[in-house]
Length: 92
Image 1 (cartoon, rainbow, N blue to C red):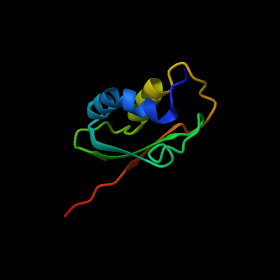
Image 2: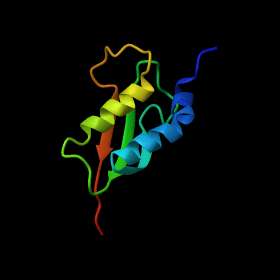
Image 3: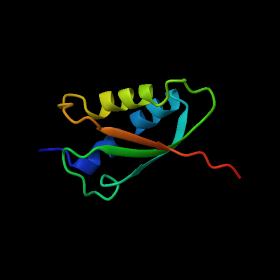
Image 4: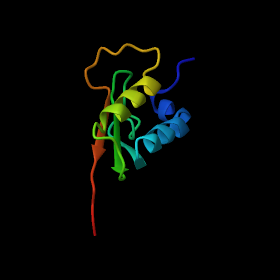
């Protein structure tokens, strides 16, 4: 039985949050086709997140690589953009 596309994020939720925290990111949200459960097997993963101080000057490269390793384990990486990150800082 194949894993449903939407189930991938649910089953790996804690690992995604752990990876995000490692890279000083928090408040991770999913948007796009995966959040609407309209994604196909080749759809990318779209994340919206906040980032805190102390992150690497190479952010978000390490975060993207770690998320791709987790979410695409054992799958072809033929697509040039498999995980996308949106980070916005809003100050009040």
